[in-house]
Length: 635
Image (cartoon, rainbow, N blue to C red; front, side, top):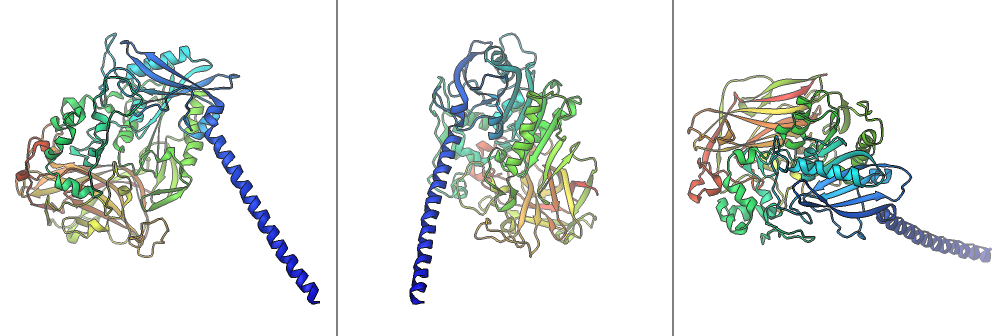
């Protein structure tokens, strides 16, 4: 009995050992397979595509460096998808391959001829670069702009690249998105589909400025756009600044006024352009692209893509979609907006998070497979009819956290509603007695845009950040509803019509729309350690308005001290449901640092030339006859 028991135990241990060995072997095999798969995936482009580098001559004789990836399988003809970029079409060398090509892995494996091009004056292309090069209407024979460079490139490609089917699509994110928009202006007949994504529309409202306020967080990388280069190069010729500190707030506070920063960019032509053109003058106006979208050919289908929480380019994609829609009624023109920060739809991290807010899983993959690839396939491989199977607006409700489809944007049942700033700093649909609420704005202690201490270019997460830190400052006014008894869905733009006064002669006005979560809101592990989702104040939308531009961006005007004055602040579209049990809060403040530069609160013709003595503490007031115009989805 004893013997049998010991034998059984030893046998059992032997089984465990065997099992462990088998398990270890199995794990090792799995790792080998995973590595083999990863290697194969990394080599997919090299194994399935041929690469060719060419220099395509433009109508003025300048040559633009272009990389062409063509499927090795020559049994069929393929459409061309092209991205023009100022950020390099690396890696250079016909024996060096990107790990992924095209808009997504899905499209890469579906088979397209994929083209990348260094735009004029960047990297390996000839000539001189010009930021947001202006469109030239009624061009003469040899005159060039980005529309002609795109036209000439497409013309060369369809006539010289083997196995192409004569149809071309363009895409790009951010600055490449701007060039994708350029492709639809005076478009080549072979261009059938364009997808401008997070596309810059106008540097006065995107990226480097917001309504006249300079986006100070961009200062660190100004050299990327303004360092001179006169020869083609395959290596970076610019260098980013080292602040010597991780505390960006303190660095810029110590370097106010802005003239202190000139020393870093003595030879930077873009910094010179910014500082010499403080108003929306002809220099900036002619670089805007939105006004050139009035005659987009019906033969070009457009799908504009953006992220509801894109801190860099939100104005551009929304205005691009709206203006193509407004002026080109017969065109196929659609929009896709998801719960993303800048360009997140081109990546897949599994969980979809912006800052501390979780929106779901594999949202980018859903977009790539079911929206983006479907669009390009239909117009470049399919019949190209208007019946693409996609809606006019594919939009994600960032409150309910679900996709919705509409045949028009804003939806037909979205109506304008006027909400009021009320006495006792309440907020709602009823008008109350007029009251003046004041706060002191001190340039030496500006309101930070985030609790985080870091040095970042184009901060992303602040777009959904917890705003409790701001709501509890004396120089931030808050107005909030009672606990909502029903869901309230905003679907469209927001207009704050403020009535304000200041003891100074200039002021910035920042308006934030905030979703206050209930105290019992569930927690999740991806939130920052110092925060809880209980009573979380999620920023839904925000914007700044430099007060002196309240009537005309080209002609600044001083405030009359202590005089009630109207200042409108347009906030970009949202699609967000404030759920039952939540509250809606409005925050109003006069600094947002160092996201944007400090207003001296004294009127100066050129803020970049302001002196330290111009920066003064002032008292600002907001009157409760101010209103917020929402676009509300009716049931």
